[in-house]
Image (tube, rainbow, N blue to C red; front, side, top):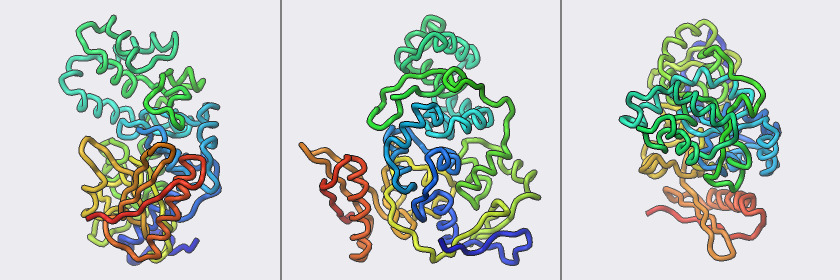
Length: 378
């Protein structure tokens, strides 16, 4: 891979172009070339992959790792090396067990705030700690699905509604993870939950580590500013954390003069470093981890990707930037993958998109020969 500048505290210009930000982010997200590291090593680099849809992290890893097979993620989940659990932005993520145990305490305030905001009146006056204790008593006996846990919690909280009780219990105060086969390829929304300490044989770290969160974020998504870290983590107060860390970080600026921070030993690929076509799954963290997302998606395309109801469609990267969306649909005995490009592109680019889409469809179906279609919006 071609590298460009390497940051040092005595840099003379310190200005990063939008294409340099794009290439730096793609490199750190393992999207400039398919990497040969293991799934656990890759997740350690990425921190987590969003997993609201069970199949999504499999597609995300296929796009990032050389020779990735579905068993490469399912195996570590079954061996308890990788977990699917609520973490960043109070959404389901796939991450290493080690990272879940280390980072959850730091992210707990964001989980509580998000859940109170999401539940509104349904959470008013509810003691989250008391609810977590009641849920733990149940989960210590056996795994529970979301619906049945809510019904069981009505015995201790009869004046509440079951879905809210279950959702708050499993997404907020109590560290829990999904037990495989929940969260594995093809499992859909079916899952049962167990406490993290019982499943992993260890408790979450006691102390909050906001500076460690910053370092991990920058390694996976930098250079960035405080608002970027806050969007990724769901936490507030990152400006103060960065102020405390200023002496150990490199300080840069984007083309608009906004101050950015990075790790001092991080490298930056040249702006003209080739970026191959990539197809990313719905909700991929590449699109969700910055306040200013123009480093990966032009503002004009955001309404085509970020849809009502919080949906984030699967995307196509062309020359490093979002250029379209894709979907699959089952038609009798075959599965079709359709790519919709937002604008017309040269024939060579269409060919590259079609080839990558065919490879992805073969990964999804497990067999070659299913049809791929390219269309242009409008």
